[in-house]
Length: 411
Image (cartoon, rainbow, N blue to C red):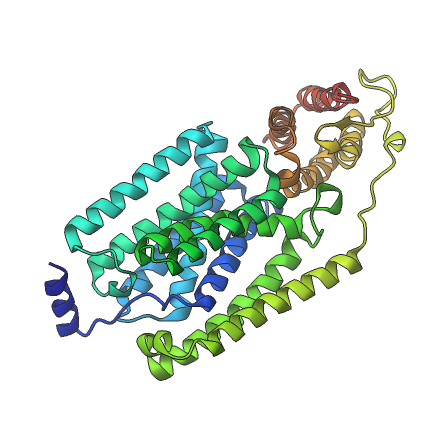
């Protein structure tokens, strides 16, 4: 069956639709994974679109990009990698929807996506007689390929979150663990393991590696990160992706993907290594220049006089120093007490952004307490963003959040 499909593809002028598997491929893959996640978070939280609108936009863009990808007759780097970035975003959002919205356990979602991927591979092999990456040269094979890609991103997200959050490994350990597993996969390939098997194992693992690496760069220093922030990290990674993809586009236009992949590997390793080195040096330099984050003095944040939670707020739970969040909540509570609901709504945006930015560092420390605070923050956001917010309802939600912060003090 695979021979017939190859002959049909040749007669219709189809060429391979995927890139050669080189060092550049893997570097772009990891970088695009991080870009996908940070951009999705930016749209959902910083831009204020919310998960539902972000999901709809990303799905529409992904469908449009895949239509363009399927209409091409050969590998076109900028189209292919645009699809990968969008699949990264949507795959991440899909897992987050199951976990955060539907409350599905990460253990269950990891198992479900694992079975789904196995089914995709089984049907793919039954229909085509091969899973070879170099033979993605018919529409049906390309359909199976992108179905597998989407599932690997969802699986990688679920498995990565399971390791770093549910198993409390954290993003620093996650970076080393997933990087080590990818290295072990490469060693297995060199030792004679199947190329198709090792490719897909590595492809799944690059998703949590990219996410852990992104969190390592973006999280504040008091959470164990380098404090670059999502915007700076995304800009660095995007610049590296643009350079590498542009080089891919030039090489493919001149020589074709087969010749590019079969050529000398020295230049490819040099470009990939240079991209990693530049990003690492720039990131480290910016981190050192950023310095240590300023943490507000806990005693400076005092709830409004006469409230149920009057007194200094200085939470020191297993989640770490939550003073920055308590300071914002105190401001919101003061504005609500003064019946400035519009001002409180504006200020609570800072809480939403700060809490979302710190999720990767805080959640693994104490998942139960993080979820309790997360639910109460959502309640505050819902109350203040209602079409006709009630001062009493807003005050109650904010007071409940502040009380929880104080209850966690010293735990």
